[in-house]
Amino acid sequence: MISAAAPPAPPTDSGLAGWAADLMSTLGAPGAGLIVALENLFPPIPSEIILPLAGFAAGRGEFSVLSAIIWTTAGSVVGAVALYLIGMLASDAWLRRTLAKMPLVHERDVVKAEQWFDRNGRAAVFVGRMIPGVRSFVSIPAGQRRMPWWEFIGLTALGSLIWNSVFVGGGYALGSRWHLVERYAGFFQTVVIVLLGSLVVVMLVRRYRRHREVKKMEAPTQVIERPTFW
Image (cartoon, rainbow, N blue to C red; front, side):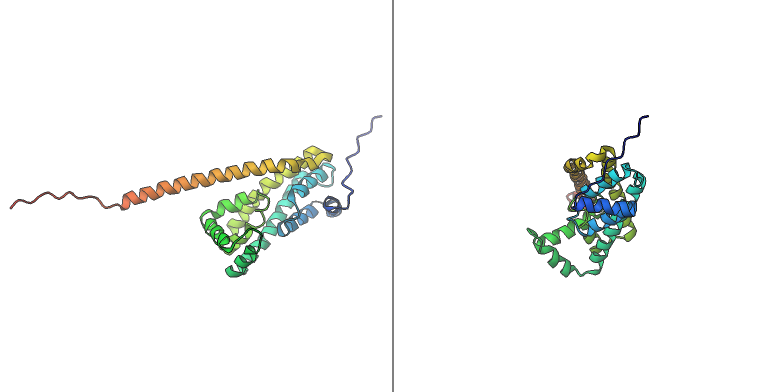
């Protein structure tokens, strides 16, 4: 009689992966959502490790892939909303001083970022959810600039759903080799950045064309005066 192969064992190390695996084993898919919510508030926790690990746990039968995606997306939204509230409640001066303390960041850079967000806020929130390092901080200017909360939540949920589905699905497909997904994170990030850059270029071209059309409409019509003969 041929016995079914046993599922691969979860990580047993005492590092982040081991702690996350233990939490998922204890709480199930909600545990994955909790970790992702914390990842939004504490960016040193990399989603590129947590999400494939959740997919690996789903492959072991601890919970379904669908529940992993739903709970991790919910965790992304909860963490993003917390940062959105910080941006909304904190004063502009405090936020600028705090962000300006980051390495290689000057207060004038923060002001320019705010002005850019005013012009491209929707794209920044949606695409920013798929760029490591940006995915957390993009929620703060959204709150600061008072983006409508329903719009913020919708764009955050959609961007997070795409990002989480890719990495949870990758971890599920690779099984015990789930950690290899992290190697492809850079490629996926590059694709997203290229798409964002293309979107910005298209928006700038359209804005320039509208500006030219408005200028043409506002230009006074030249009237040719005919000489008057007495």
